[in-house]
Amino acid sequence: MMAPFYKYGMFNDEVSLILAFVIGIGFGFFLERGGFGSGRLLAAQFYFTDMRVFKVMFTAIVTSMVGIYYLSYLGVVDISLIYYGNTYIMPDMLGGLILGIGFVIGGYCPGTSGVALATGRVDAIFYTVGGFFGIFVFGEIYPMIEGFMNGNNMGLINLPQFFGVNYGLVLFAVILIAIGGFALAEWGEKLMASKRKAEV
Amino acid sequence: MSIKEWFSHHHEDNVRAHALVPKHYWNPYLVGIGLGIVLMLTFVIMGRGLGASGAMSTVVSVVVDEVAPEHAANNQFYQNYLGDGTQSPFKDWLVFEVLGLLFGGFISGAIAGRNKIIVEKGPHISTKKRFLFAFIGGSLMGFGAKMARGYTSGQGLTGGSMLSLGGWSFLLMVFVGAYGMAYFVRRQWI
Image (cartoon, rainbow over all chains, first blue to last red; front, side):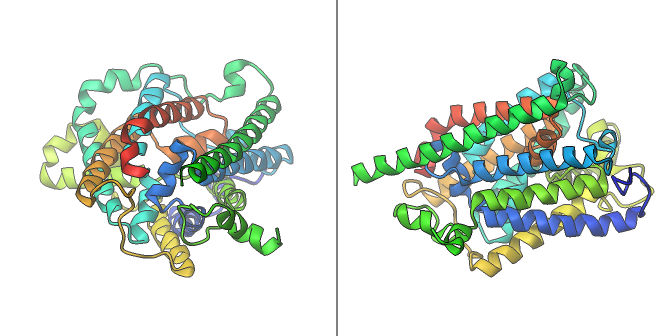
């Protein structure tokens, strides 16, 4: 085992900040390449007119999921040292629901709004200001909902542990679901395209 | 389709004459692999995933702390982002990552000639209304992201690829929320 490098003390915090900037550049670059800087294109997922963002997102999840699993299998990465956040099931689900509603109304999520800002989208300014406002409102009511937020803590738990099945099996299932999702997305796009042609 | 066409997604855009996109983006599956590799490298190098809303929370916490320090001191949420006071709250991994994200997005847009001052909206909505919707959507997103302790990349990409129970529950609900709401705001986009 030699990775995660940071956890094995291969470099200090100062260096980690430089790496953060470099990694961020890669992140922003690919988001923009994928069309995540366009609010219309992001919103198009929800009307099946252009499923590009959906395809990018799930290809990314599958790539990283399989890659990290393979590196762990090879003994390069200690997967137990990777932090991905505890599961608080109720706040996670309610937060996701609110975020989903906000996504289709606003057209972005925090990361994509950054790319939209950087590429000149004026609406992304309003979105970002809204984001700050939403976080502020959350911060203000946080003391009142602390019980809800810290209840249901299930710890660092993944799907294989939760369902009590083999990690590889879940991995395989996610790949199958992703391929099914891609097929659906391609089909949906074609359907909407022919619908539009019929209208014209 | 030639390799060049596949790479640029050119072919598909030509077939779909109605395409929303004027300029050619890269093939989405190719971009996904690129993004996935960045994410995987982040795991390998740092032992953590990507994020963005955390950096926004740092900004909010610092502003609240500047305006009302006592108020911020009594609130655990702000305290989490302010740290122990031994160093600037902006000396934070996510803050630097987001600065990089802005830069990377700008570079990619500049190369492709997509950096333009425009408003993203459908043809049937006024700019003013679009701005209002953007603000409302942003507020909901900020609130929801903090409740879920992360957002699309924190919970979705990172939690998703680590097969986190919370991450996948979160992703599922994002889709429920977005597809459920889509019909009611369709005038904004299509």
